[in-house]
Image 1 (tube, rainbow, N blue to C red):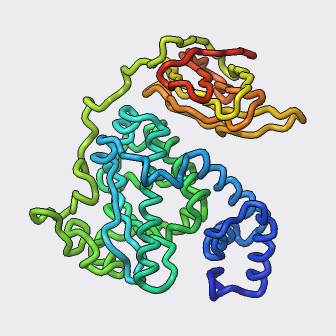
Image 2 (cartoon, one colour):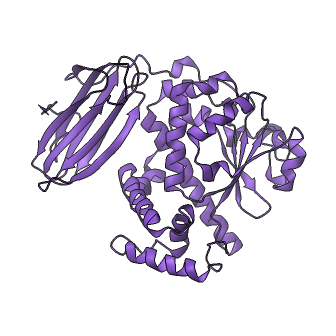
Image 3 (cartoon, rainbow, N blue to C red):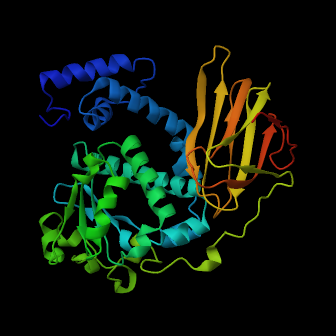
Length: 397
């Protein structure tokens, strides 16, 4: 049985019911059975693993404000121009086709031009747009459409693909995609596969989970004909074996794929020389294998914790949590490594409850390198102006 609505075995029906019982405290009306089944299929109908995955997804949606991203987010020009990719049509099953010019993507240029968190927010925005397309296609066809076919064009892939910060971002983004948009990709067709790919492919184990790797299909050198087994020609741009053209007969449909396709990000977009905006910066040398932990006592609900930091060289971990009276911990911002040596990282978090909070700059994973850190942490009481605040720091190392 497929594990989808209308095609469930008795065991799968029982697991779905048990899954609902495990999530009874968080389920809402928009959590339809079809959505729950996506999480169950992603974890082979293991209700405990699926329940953990679902709860993490809810927290992730809250942290990234996913519900409002389509209304509140406007892509920076550099991402709009040079990230690339878009929905070009539908496959023979009626599922949307996402064309991703991955081989030409200039990861170094992008990560020099925007914060890692901005790049992640852009990926979320793209996925939420795809969800809208899936919903519209479901209404049009009168059945649930919940998966996409991806075309990954690897033309241009070379040694630059091995740049470590780019690989680490792709690994993080892939994990987020699998965790928070489960069972969305039906298949990924790899085209224009260069000879170097066979040397790079082992890195897929570093970036992609096994369930995702099983969906990869490498098309032959005659891929423009082979791809038509999956997608009709009128659903593809001319450049990729179809008949579509953009304005003025553009064979690549760059109005969908991105005007900067095939070119590197101009250095004029780089933010590598950007300094921290706050006048209250603190510097600290974090030795290899250690960390810096800062403690804050918050009295007013709705207090905003604003952060800004960068390192002189190399990446650094960052996390925020609340310490409860009983010794338990509420994770506010999960630990993540940031390439803040390239572009300063900044953001703010609303602390809904009074209590004791900790901010941690983590270098415990690095056995060889210490990090020179510049940072500013500010607590902003409700009603204060974000632009007119004073630093209130209590440090516990």
